[in-house]
Image (cartoon, rainbow, N blue to C red; front, side):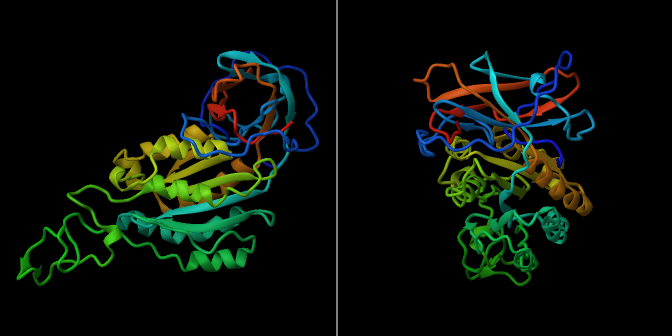
Length: 363
């Protein structure tokens, strides 16, 4: 079975105590609950990825890694523990089934030149991590979201789209096109002085040195593209490649609203932070989205790193432990925090931190 089932909430927990007897993996993924509430859009608090909640059964995809960051694929049902509202729950079922992926590849189109020069040549490597049953949609964002041509399983078509993806690099703060009111460079009669660099795309401007990039809106729009994908049959993933900069004033959707939508849809965000994001520590948004949805984050310092990360991400997302439990918490509450632990020592658990009572679920 490919790597270990991974990916829900980005909660990291360390194991304690000994192993328990083997439990046979379930043969198939849980079926959708006819009484489950449709996915909603109301803002809510943090949650994490591929956990599926039903009024009766919550489905929790989980990734487990060792200290070296390798996937751990030999855990048994009795080695897992799940807590809801700090109360331990009984695990009803356990499986290690491999799921096909629906991926929105969300590429930052407003990177600095050095980052863009590293990211752009690596994009073709995304195809190498896809299987014939996976589907992907290639999208870009800056101040606006650029949807692309939609989902396809055709890898030749995806390769063509990625070849045509040329990243625009971020303009220096304080420059703008001729006549631009935000242009702080030298002008003659209202026009830029000779030799003054010009910015032809207003979506890539920096206003008073602040980023105009709308990262939150981009993630929200990427999530909406997967609204009709069944989270009980496919792992829903956003592969976010960015420096993490986000112009708060330029987003229509706030972080809590976007996180709630990701959680209700069971979407995991896997972030690849560019080199400058790591060096300048501007990746908080990337960490939060990955952690809250049960995804993961990788930090790229060179081109070869990005290529390796893409394959690691698809392996993690496709192969997860899937746990289910029947919640005993207060049904009147919309949001329930969750914690997943393993008894084996020295392991890190990635699973989302909660679920909403109206999230898609299984029985």
